[in-house]
Image (cartoon, rainbow, N blue to C red; front, side, top):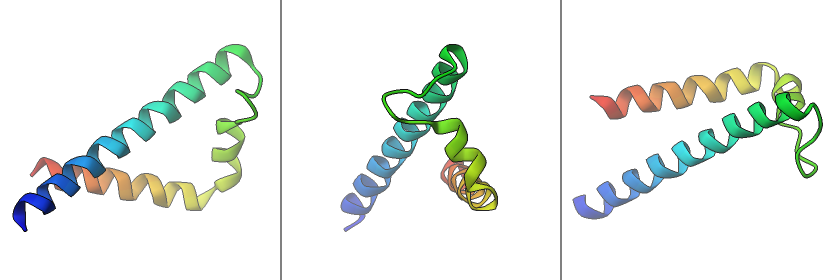
Length: 69
């Protein structure tokens, strides 16, 4: 059971890191070209999310801090 748990946590960490990498890449590319990326507009999505996005960021940060211990 511990093996399965560790495998699940490891895969979740990889998925979160990959998602954050794509989000950062999308923001940088959109800032450089000043247009949507294949219909995806990450900057306006973040701006329109408001407080809910801040909640998601805080959960990700807390999760990363918890994993480092």
